[in-house]
Length: 231
Image 1 (tube, rainbow, N blue to C red):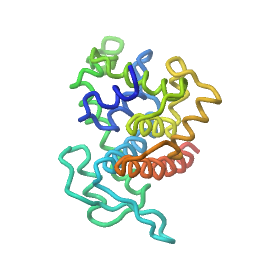
Image 2: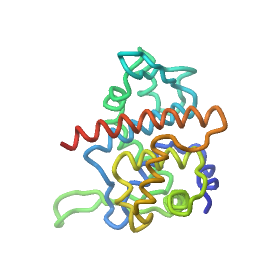
Image 3: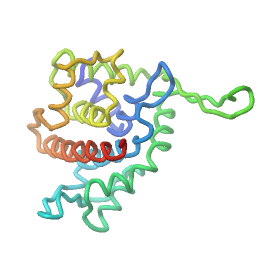
């Protein structure tokens, strides 16, 4: 499966969906980095909005980088709260992550289950305590996504806009080494991922260039936020 195929298949998928799916661990049924996941998903939603031309970045001097709304309100209900937040007035990136991220995990997970990317079963721990078990679904999309990421990070394939953004966000979250059994973790892999995190990837089209710039702004904010959160 090529990176291009994975990025274009079911193009209605959000980047945020793929980030959550990539962080899902089939071997344990858990999601990597749960404690700070909402920051990462908030960043992914900002990247989605940038890709759609719904937000723009503005240098506010001493106030730093601000995000403001542009264009029409997005149709996707998962993108609307973040867009509404910056539509009221320009906001700092970290403010947007903190405001929009906490409500995203559940709806995004529901969407992955609906698409067949993940399966969810209700069980009882020790026969008494209700619990939810997640497993990889039958759609095959996660395998395709991981293969596309591996092709870029290990085989040196040129990344598409979408795959580059997913890799950058997963790397910034600290979750990429957890995928070692699927994407071999090495200094070369880390170097390639770091380059993508810093927006060092081709973006000839105007829309792709906007996504690349937003990805760099978001991942820088993520790294700073997660360092503080993990202290």
